[in-house]
Amino acid sequence: MTGRRTAGTVAAVDLGATSGRVIVGRVGPDTLQTTQLARFANEPVQTADGLHWNLVGMYGSVTNGLREAFRSDPSVASIGVDSWAVDYGLLRDGRLLGEPFHYRDARTASGVANTHERMSHAELFERNGLQFLPFNTLYQYAAEPPELLDFADTALLVPDLIGYWLTGEARAEQTNASTTGLLRVLDGTWDDALIAALGVPRRILPPLIAPGERVGALRGDVAATLGASREVQVTAVGSHDTASAVVAVPMRADAAAYISCGTWGLVGVEVDHLVLTPAALAANFTNEGGVDRRVRLLHNVMGLWILSEAVRGWERAGHPIDLPTLLDSAAELDAPAAVFDVNDPRFLPPGDMPERIDAWCAEHDVAPPRTRAEYARSIVESLAQAFADTAVLAGTLGGVDVRTIHIVGGGALNTLLCQRTADRAGLPVLAGPVEATALGNVLIQARAMGFVSGSLEALRDLVARTHAPTRYEPRASR
Image 1 (cartoon, rainbow, N blue to C red):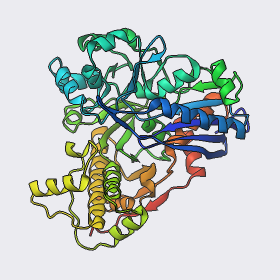
Image 2: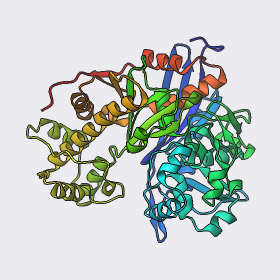
Image 3: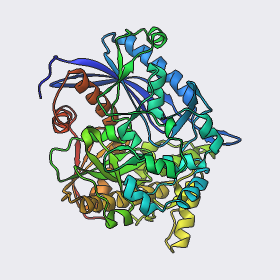
């Protein structure tokens, strides 16, 4: 890899479902360093009409973090924003029409029913290539009051909305737009016929933009607030956090699957072709847009959300939990753990996860866990089984002979989960980098700014040289 400059600095805004961060990255042909300058909680808010994100408050935290970034390094040349997918804000004349709904809000059920009255999932899959998830954006639009959609003049997914507030430019980044269900999977453009058939006003959907393209320069008032030059630009990255994470998976061969593991576990393979087969439809796989027009053939697995929500429940009941200690206790257990279906819809909304695990076990004649350590072990074993099965199936569907599984994101720190995934898959697991999403974000910005150059493979080679993963060899399953 060669670059036109020795190294340069960019800022990544990485918004997750439980927390957000501002990270400064220094990138060059042999340099990939990141420093976290701000971290802030992302707590949903329950109001009378449902569960919402506090996005305005989060934007305040983002600007505070960016101010610190420019204070610490005035040479920051670009800002990139990534977040979770599917959720959006509606605007009119630049004003946000209420805080965006959370994808776990129960209102999406009515949207599914309204949509499938007009078009079945199989018909939708032919057009948009997506797996069925009840919170996909098109179902959320179908749950909106029609008069509200008519009143709005713009709809922006979360990272696009942050970019709009920073620049005044309304754009829809392609990797995240691919999760709305409203793009033509064959060419990655807005599907005007589908949009009309579902009753979504076409005018609210902004122009599409690809990762690496310029969104716009900072607004004057924003630049002044941040202490930044007006020449600093916001650059489109893989704004769906999984798209950015996959950029930084240090795959050095095609025969690999990836798991971007955090609140969700996104399990799949990267391919250069669409997979719209009956088998992919039956397995509920998705064809999401990747950076450089790659296809992320994957399946959403419920992820560490189940464990996190269980821990929150225990702590609300007055039992403080030290997660590393809990996982150590879980790892020491010798008795077989209950393995349940983590993709059962009952585990999607917030609530009492141990109670739901008990109910699933009772319905399937499985002995339930009894102690908190047993619940933790059961969750980890169930996730590991789902990850292993899905990684192998992704390879089969995509024509990839999977010989290695990469785990990136927060799940790469969970040694029990990584080892048990290797054990259950019978394949080596390479864990890390933990900060894959932020690394992918800064790499795409750096390439756009000329600090590095090359293909995704070249970028991944830089990740592999600077962030060596931890290897887990499969053992005989206990």
